[in-house]
Length: 219
Image 1: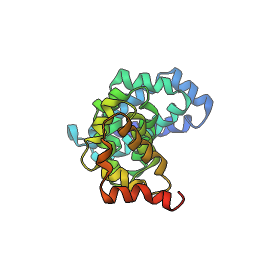
Image 2: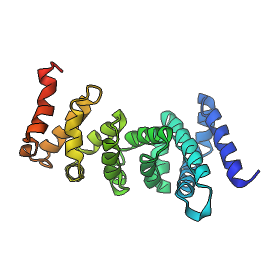
Image 3: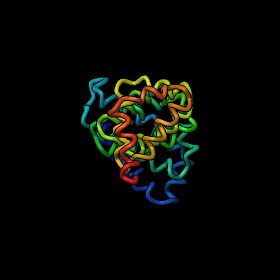
Image 4: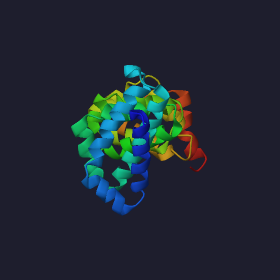
């Protein structure tokens, strides 16, 4: 089989092995976390058209790899954190949060949410805040807001969030959506508490209406 086809076959096999606790432990012992991180970096590059590879196959490999990393992360998060740090894979994970592949995007967001508390600096340095805010504007998910809520606990990161074009308006609008309301309010509260967002920045009629609406509805 060609190298690209062999990689896809290997990734599918790894995915099957990760479905059992015994298989996951054996793969972790064999260094699967770092191997998957390296594979993700390669697949992300191919998906972008680097090196003249097949972009479609690169996207497929990236999806398979991020799914496998999520599975490994559910078994041993510390191993994945070390692997991401040792291989400098964070930019590839952050980039996947903006992919048009819904499954890959969801897996990347889930992994990023898990990694963010201990790796906030790397997430931000890899363009994570800009990508997360852009993702918000296209449709919020629990993972996106959860990650922003974690990052907004740092004054430096809170300022970066507040300065993202359109971020404030989007967060205010999300207060009106019951399934993400608490997370949106949490981010806004952190921004205000840390001085990243002066309270008068929320004084516009539209913003106040959005913030008060849940109270008027008993939400």
